[in-house]
Length: 380
Image 1: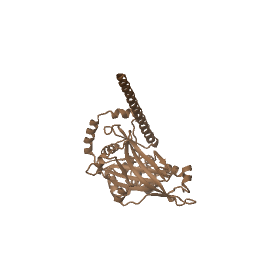
Image 2: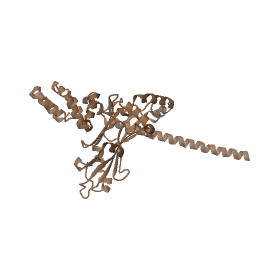
Image 3: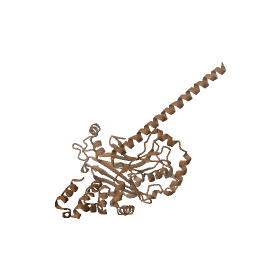
């Protein structure tokens, strides 16, 4: 529980609960997290009353997700049931509770393609790209460095079927999306707590910047379905994986996301919702590194199945809709375990495919040798 709230509760026991000003309680509750507010609710009737104030939760959401300060978004959240419900739905992350293995994926793969196609065609009538709203916020050391509101899905209204049949991907920092919204580039500098970099060679050796990014950067990607009045956070908040100095020495690649169900939609029955964040060192300081700046160059969402194939737009709409009803958790380790389980299933599947190819090649080679031996015997 927050130190300030603890002091208030202790003071209320000594001086009497009526000595506390309700406005003071609300003011302090606006500066703590949701778990602290939930704990404070049990302290007394006055705290309970304060924690049920919609304005308290609105301020909490505004601090955690700057994108919710937009007037249209605030109206949308009110229509969804209010800021308290919004926080309850969006602060936890998606947890895929089923076991993922290559054996399970092969069993799902064996199901009829025709039945999956019929299911998708039927379900597509209940979902539209215009139903979705994305609220994306990036924090570094608890300071917001980037916020984005995306109404609908770019390119989904294309009448020639390009979106439905192409790999699903949205890059918020692409020139197309930025041109539509007139956005500027997001940067992290020393003012946000970025450690100074005197040389790239030294950074490659000690990895100080990489450790700082891994420890302090946070990503939230909230998906809202306006028709169904449901919300979900597709991000893991903290990174699940990544690569430093890739593809160049100045680039860092961080992976966030969650594992999502795709039963009856895709052959393997499960996908990885990957949120890719790329940062580039745009200015390396000389001497003390006082001009070090890190530029956000890519912020993308994509879906990938166990076989490594990217999911197309048509199937992605169905998977995203299903994600709105997934289990949630506030335990990062559980999300990380599901991610590693997915990667293990991918690796197992690749090994099986290689073994099958090797077996087929061996059979073909033996068949060729046998055919040659028979032809020689006939000739002789």
